[in-house]
Image (cartoon, rainbow, N blue to C red; front, top):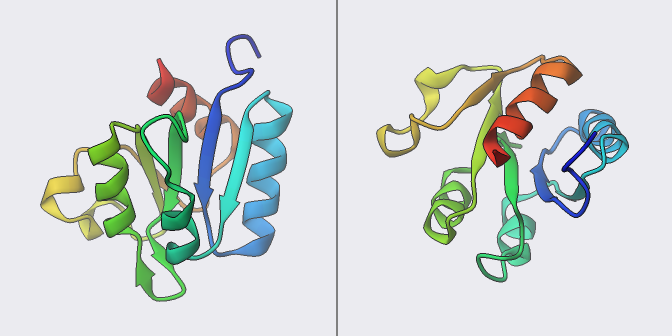
Length: 119
């Protein structure tokens, strides 16, 4: 896929099997993907506005909401999208305008959402 080389994505997903599938799919599309399974792990990866080009965030990480990380990404100007089985109703008002992928999702809608986020 054109234009994806050197685009760095942060994937925050606590379901190991799903994270592995998504990482492999995005990498095969040409993205550089860094995976974090816990909120603290993901926060530690943020080193500034140039650390990632975009992020895909599971809303619920083993009972811990990802919203503090989403706000950190927003403050750094890094585009993000949420992935959840709960839908947009579970997003706080200040984050409700971000795109949401409804779980379970297929690879093509994920790729389309990531492409849109980066355009």
